Image 1 (cartoon, rainbow, N blue to C red):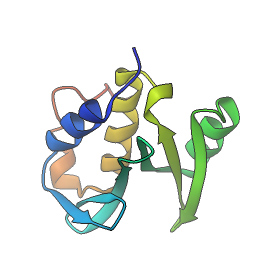
Image 2 (cartoon, rainbow, N blue to C red; image 1 turned 60 degrees about the vertical axis):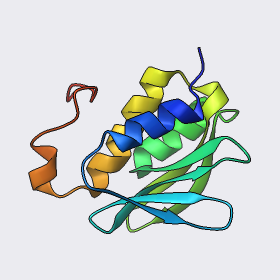
Image 3 (cartoon, rainbow, N blue to C red; image 1 turned 180 degrees about the vertical axis):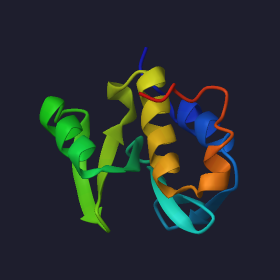
Length: 118
């Protein structure tokens, strides 16, 4: 079953110290002032911070599901079409985006649904 906006919001809401910002067409998500994600309700897509290598891998493997959004500060952002990913894959992507932005003290207690470190 594909992921939904409700799945995305449930995941984000369970993370520590999330801040939301509202744009005209999107909502942004940050942790202690560092942005890690976006949500566009009209297109049912999310933008998530990833490593550059993960960005390239996702986009090259499934260009119908993932799009390159932009690169900044050594990170690659991807647009994720929610209808193309399963909820567990979305959880991994959301957690990785948050983890890349969260300070060390928050990483010590990951959410219960976080994937095990590789």
